[in-house]
Length: 325
Image (cartoon, rainbow, N blue to C red; front, side, top):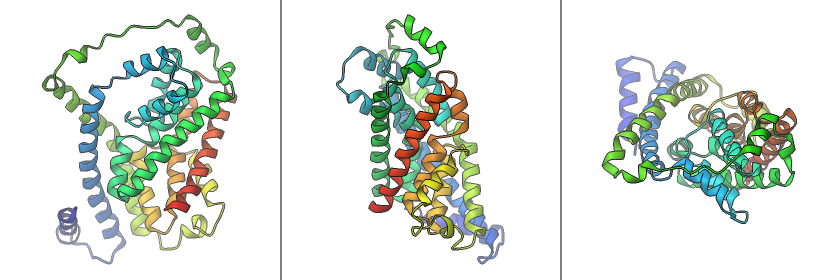
């Protein structure tokens, strides 16, 4: 599918730049050029298609739907599925999470959204298809949605509303249902297209720095890290590799576009896919910047419970991935 891109990368690295095929620098640059072009093409297509879907599926409607109907538990799954069509990293999801809580949506339901949104979205799906194929992508998407749904149900069962900050409690006490008019419904597709195009370009520009940094790191790892280096600490023979990888990821911060090229290199170096994905989930879904933003709506105890629950779910997912793939 990308043979033409392989030829372009080969020409640039070995002919235009004149680098030796055996050099580490050539391997690193070749990885960077090839993956940058491939991932950007995939991302633009997927983001544009999802922009069309999102234009017919506005966030305000979802919030109103979840607050005005009794869905008998399906709201957790719906919130998790909604998280898959929002192109946000964990920190970008927090403002919307605050809006959901302020709008009266149950806390567990908002957690389902907050967990799934950075893990599974059009960016992550586009990258996964390009890097690991459709089968692995499907398993990842299903597991991400189930993780968000299950964690939301568990957190709701704890009755954690008492650990919200006074600021949120005050808003909830005064919350009233808001009626939203959907101007977009009066527009045809031709009228929406410029807005969709603008949003797609905006999203690509927003994630481009993370993407290029992630690919650059992946390229350096691909070119310079010797074979067997990672297996020593994160290999399949180490039963504790999944929890260690997850915990090590928490202090880091990136979005899916930035960390997936690194995951690709980890897998290429011999790390089990489940372990590498658990590391990615920890980086994308749990981060210190996210915790600082959540402090506006949660006490530290609630943040700790949230992080702990999601960490356990990620570790379980990592082990299951290693068994399945």
